[in-house]
Length: 108
Image (tube, rainbow, N blue to C red; front, side):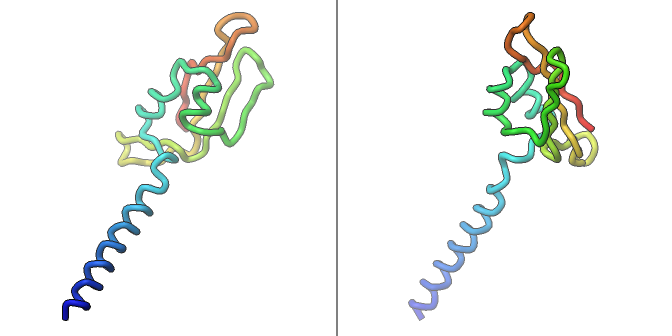
């Protein structure tokens, strides 16, 4: 009888840990819009990459307006937590030839 209770406790603990691990596994990949903006606004390209990871695509064809596009990484609390298909971070140089800084975020 004691053995079966001990096994049950172990199984329960294992199940709780497994569920916790699965639910926390993707936490860094999805951001509420305000949290994403706080993480990137005014930051350098290196700081943005460190904060939210590599973008899905980069458009550097215009050095005065470089865009990084992230796919499905933000959601809108004001719209029933609907996930944004794309989040675009717009970078502009601080000065001629200067470091890029995130100046705008577009949610699509």
